[in-house]
Structure formats: structure tokens, C-alpha cells
Image 1: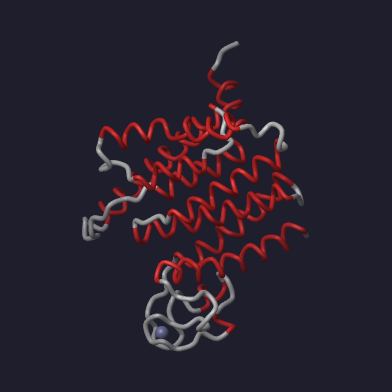
Image 2: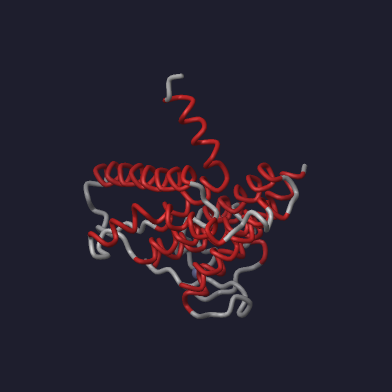
Length: 258
Ligand SMILES: [Zn+2]
């Protein structure tokens, strides 16, 4: 029952996050005007704004002008729903769960904006850093959250990508990627940093493979576009924050022969 309530709340917050993702990078207000179709400008009625369901009922098209609606909208709503349920599953009804959910939402926002525009704002990265710090304090207590502890995670987490950034002179990796790893790495142990980087590169690898497969079917009609790394780093940060230590344990159990 609790999962259903929290999941529904996640969907609604995801719907609001969509508004933020669309409007904030354009410098528009997130309150006024009410939702409207970007193609025909018609106001979208409340019954067409139900998360995920409306997209399915409208078959991904505007009710009035039939222009396509980006599938990113229901995807963001569903990811937000998942983040909400995962947060309370791991930490119960607590401040830590709430902070983890907000961190997930900020990572989701950064990912989708990076995917669409290849840009990351310093303000969002700073917000992530503050939330990550608050999350660590909520779990380990203020006494254990020392300066060395705060600095170590970001250094460990940035090591590999920072090196790639310097060697490739900012071509293979952007400064935004480095800063994202830094902000998200606050509180990470060595093991968590390794898991975070591994997950990011592994999911990116799977994505590139999938993309190549789809393009071979479509016979390369798709426009070639650069692949932003921010979404994959975000997945790595979230997975490692939730389960980095457990994944490392599992790895040792599987690989190391005792
Ligand atoms: Zn329209």
C-alpha cells in the first residue's frame, strides 16, 4: 500500500520534473503559463496530463494537432516512480530516503537536459553536491563526516574520467562530466567509486551496442550525434549510492576464491 502511494507521488513529481526539464533551460517560468502544446499552442486539459496514462491514450500525439509528443515524458515519469519506491525500499520512511529520492530527481534532471542540450549548469551540480553531503550526514552522522572524508570520495570518483579529460584535452570527456562525478562522489568509499565508474562505463557500452544494432536495422538513416556521458554517470552515482558496497561484496564472493 505504501509503495502504491509513494509510487503515485513519484509519477506526479515526475510530471512536474518534465515541466522543469522543458522550461528551465529555456528561461521560462515553471508555474505560468499552464501546460500547452509546443506545436499548436493549445492549452492541455487536466485529463490529458495524467502521468504515463495520457501518453498511452493519446498514442504519443497531441489531441489537437497530432504532432508527436516526446517519449521522454512518460520515461521521466516512470523513472521518478521507480526512484520513489526504491528510496523507501532501501531506507524506509526516513530523511535519508527523502534525500536519496531528491538526489535521484536532480540526477534525472541533469541527465535529460544533458541528453537534449549537452549542457550541465553549475547551479545543478552544486545542488547535487549539497544534497549528497546532507545525505551522507543523515546516514553516518555529523561526527564521521570529516573534511578528509568529504574530499576523498570526489577525488577517487573523478580519477579515471579526470585523466581521460586531461589526456584528450576535453574532447573525450567534458568538464561537466568531471564535475558531475565530483559532486556525486561526495561520501563515496574506494569501492563505491569503482562501482560508480564501472556501472557508468558498462551501461554506456551497452547503450552504444544497442544504438549500433538499431542503426544497422535502420541502415544508418539516423543522424550521427555525439553521445552525452552525463546520463550514464548519473546511473552510476545512483546505483553506487544505493548498493555500491553490496555490489563490491558480491563481486568478491563471486571472484575471489577463498
Ligand atoms: Zn498540438
